[in-house]
Amino acid sequence: TPRTRALFERAKKTIPGGAGSTARLPRNGWKPYPLFVAEGEGSRLRDVDGNEYIDYLLGLGPMILGHRNPVITRAVSDAVANLGTCFGLPYELEIEAAEKVVAAVPGIDQVRFTNSGSEAVGTAVRLARATTGRRLIVRFEGHYHGWQDTVYWSNHVDPALAGPIENPRPVAMGGGVPTELEDTLVVLNWNDPEALIALMESRGHEIAAVLTEPAVFNTGCILPEPGYLELLREQTTKYGAMLIFDEVITGFRFARGGAQEWFGITADLVTYAKGLGGGFPVAAVAGTREAMRLIADGTYSHSGTYNANVVQCAAVSATMDLLAEPGLYERQRALGDRLATGLETIARDRGVAAHVTGIGTVFQLWFADQKIRNWRDAAAYAREDVFTRWYEEMVLRGVLFHPLQFENLFISLVHTDADIDATLNAADDAMSVI
Ligand code: PMP
Image (cartoon, rainbow, N blue to C red; front, top):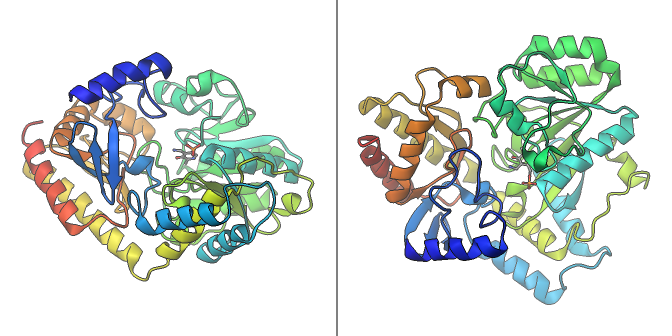
């Protein structure tokens, strides 16, 4: 990998840490340096040294329709050629994009576009505070809500914490400088009805919103227990707090209508990013008409130079059209399920203790003797040493995914049966040497 090595040395001179967002992760990270991409195409990536990979990282999730999807790319370039890039003024394509998102997702009436998932979460949190006149936000240990988040990593390294903690010890993310997510109450156990009920009974009337990933994908692909999201809905309604679903990962991935459609629960506010623009950088905060009222009447100014720019709206509009193809999600789910169960079977046959959590479209293979049900289990039982060897052996065999075990494998809607077959072959080989 001579070219990769040279680029990394060059990058370190002008880019702190050597490259963009994911290149320098804590703990294992990319070893010994990140892969430098030359091009992506469909489900494949090629690096600068000519190696090709079947890609299950998918840019950390957004490439839901594959790299360089020709329809989306064309729609964006046409829109820029015909319209321009951004105006700070309204134009029809923004309406078209908004209408398609609202039509795709049950439970939302309105949507505002913005630039990143972090911004969308920040907007939802501030909007909930403005709407309710309350300050406290309830959130859950191990959930990640963006770069303004000060508590995510502390949750990984401090399993001694117990009970809801006010103003949690800020560590790591953003250097631990508090931002939107200060004044949060962190409920330590997600999927724990008693913990939530107890908190709401004691502080429910102070709480502006309960903020949750509807399924947890930043610490291990953990699905809600039956009835848990219903409980969050019921408790927030009971105490006049808003329910915010952070669907940055689940949106347009679990189903076209995201987790709201998949689980049949309607939140007040929902945040989207990743899948929304088919890989183009766009995010959104959406919600019921009532939840979006303060934006509509101008009380809450959702401002931003690049919000709803032409690139974003063209990408969203084309992505929504493509995602409407009948049978697409069923096909993707079947492929993902085949990969997930195939990996479990290979591990079993090779005598490796491993199991899958999540659903076919986004999952993780854990190397652990015990079933992983939450991040504490992951901290206690997940074998990082085995996972790292597995990751490295798979990269050598042309299969790429996130190098950290508490992250995810993403399946796109353009992965093929041939990709899954090749991945399972590589896995069989890799599993025999880890
Ligand atoms: N919320 C969730 C659930 C996420 O997974 C992420 C990103 N991984 C974010 C928010 C932040 O989104 P962004 O990186 O676009 O700011």
